[in-house]
Length: 392
Ligand SMILES: Nc1ncnc2c1ncn2[C@@H]1O[C@H](COP(=O)(O)OS(=O)(=O)O)[C@@H](OP(=O)(O)O)[C@H]1O
Ligand SMILES: [Mg+2]
Image 1: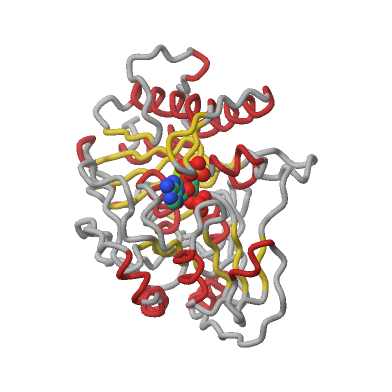
Image 2 (image 1 turned 30 degrees about the vertical axis):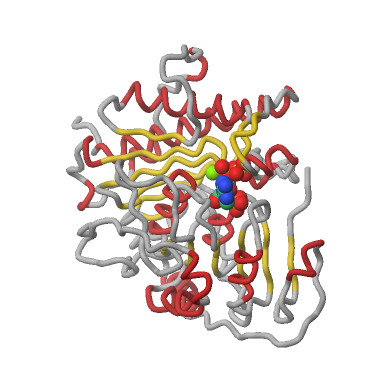
């Protein structure tokens, strides 16, 4: 039997290796020996970040030696990797899926893999374990086309259910491993950073007149909130986010018809020679291009002036569609056998709901209803509620 196209082999290997990395992260937390190192201001690294990266990069490199892989952590490439860190298996369910036509002949040299072995390190060290994700993003000619988001502590409050989950997606195929709900139509819920906030980050969020602000850790976690329909937009007016933070989340968003751009509305470039920082800030939505651009238009000039203009990825010929015109969208389930988001096999009712969602037109609120968090003093009067999930 002919082997699957490179992209599907990469995704299936990434799903399997993300599960192993997730187990390593949980084991290190259980051991209580986090080995915290301060890389810079407000920038931590733990033994879990290091070990998870060793596992992911070594496993993928062994199987795909010609593919460029960049991980967040600067580690010694010559160090010996323990045998139990190497994942040799692939996810069979991924391999059974059909590769979208436009990705069938991708060559090794067209691909860059961006790895954040533990997104949300600050929250990890503080015990906000459900904010943690493992991110493996796959870019083709600079475009984020496939990604895996593994959440090691999903279901931690429900011991009857399996701990952890793996969400993955391929642009043109769909997104798998999660349930999507239509977000509320009569309000605007915005998510942003919990641990890397400042006046500009906060003011930019408030300029959108949100009814609710959800401050949680991790880029992966926030994009999960977006694709599950718990928030309408993820806004971050900071240059601090890096390519390994955004590549996998952006790819999963693309797979379900969403988009991630800088605050000027320019899409990110994930080619191997790009600068690592997303200096244009970031905006992610699961809206159509017009609505996404509507949010971009509301970002204040002050925030745009403070951010650089990103150099966009070259246009990828995606089945004739351009950025924001990804026709895929639908519903999904945690069960692997269920219909993937983005599949053309989406039932019509689910399709309708999803289309309705894309037409969300936020109603600005003018009354202050009080807030629920200690950050409440920073909120503008229009914000009714600010939330932060509880510690384990
Ligand atoms: N220096 C700096 N400045 C501003 N923002 C930054 C910085 N470093 C990382 N990030 C943002 O931090 C989040 C996750 O990053 P990491 O996975 O590297 O972990 S850590 O929390 O920073 O330790 C993620 O966002 P939040 O979790 O929402 O804060 C990144 O976008
Ligand atoms: Mg990160």
